[in-house]
Length: 386
Image (cartoon, one colour):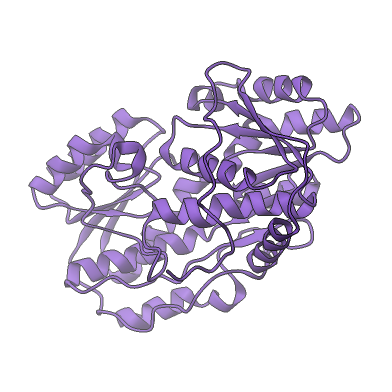
């Protein structure tokens, strides 16, 4: 199977985070093989260069007279709202009647809005940050009244944390010709790429606080794949610290991060599964630790949203995997247009682009590599719209 990054995914899983504040520790103060370090450095260089692929070259013209909704997990979370807003802009270019719906980070709202979409007899709903497992019955309901469901950056009901059940999306965004699911994209590209940067940056000699949010399936995928890759780092010592969405949005995350830093005074790296954890507490805890004398403390994230780009410029955040979130929304609209037309899905071309203080996008938003900068014009050409 074709892959665009170097990573072995056959290593045993590290133990999942234990309940409570203590978490668990894995690894030793041994040595990391030269091969693992070389692989990590090669993967890191490729990620800094960017892994975008060719843009779609052809497709059906705009399918007219459609009413669609974009359901974002929250309009306050950049990883949800940026792709949803991109989808809205693309839908308007396609000539569709489109509505952006705020899920308010509440599964009850997700379900209510899906049923509202069914009552409104829309043609389709696109999901952004709303995984199938949280809305399974509602998806079955809307599909029962001929409303299509398209997964943008969302997991279908056959993901491994949903028990490997039956997939329910009518279609979902394709991330390349071989690696087509969001689950695989997060597990094979995003999580291991972050771990590789840590291995490369520390020459395989890192003591790491790995903060994990396992009550979110997507973020658990990131945490699992980070742990898998770090398990190959023989010189890395990993302390897993669990937190929940309640901690994240309830103002408790800074305290948890501070406690972990105090418990592990020799840790030189803090890793989180998404940039929101940095802005909602972990960044402040790391800054405070640096002021107390831990000058070289590294902090890694995932998404590369505008707030994190600013934090990297300021020095709070050390690294992030940049994901082209607005482009993801446009690619989802193209995928839905293909679904309406009854034609096969194609590789969207979206990759990743790592960033640190020496590798930042020119503006305030990461939205793909420079070679992909004309993706909007490319889609409009395919759709036959101005």
